[in-house]
Length: 217
Image 1 (cartoon, rainbow, N blue to C red):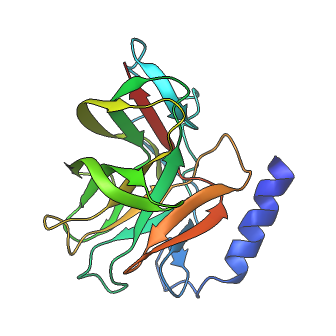
Image 2 (cartoon, rainbow, N blue to C red):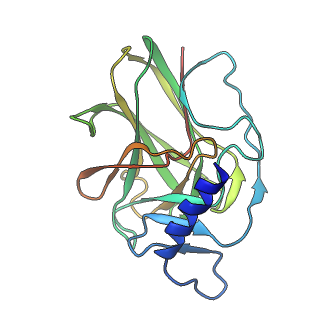
């Protein structure tokens, strides 16, 4: 795993732009990927309070100072940012009928309003489709490059069907059009999985998933 992570970071770093003076991160030209150039600080270790909930899907680590990886992130941007709109989505398939109540994600703010929106979407031929629940707006995210607090979106017991694929989308809405935020990758599984991103339309891709926990009753 360690060797795989080092190789992945090396490939990503090869495509990054030069670091501006005093800046502690670099970004790809299209803004889709961010990588820290300094070690993480600790900004409120994650406190898990979901012992009574069923885990529908999670790649969050149980280690409070490594709940996710601090220093490589996916961009989440509103339409009024310098990169234009960019959303990220992760698919999941429940293995039983369950009701969605909470989503936890490793989210950070880079610039702007400091707000993101999280919603549940149906599957549309392998891409996010119609919105089924949300969006839930989350504000006051910690600044980028730190670990390990979690942004929490609560849902009102949304029914999910066993064996049906759904998507959790982290994006922006009318409350976050100028917000530039980041979604940290997970620290537990460096394999490639299906996911999708939105820049005017949805595009399927594969890669290391961002850090997310999906829970229900």
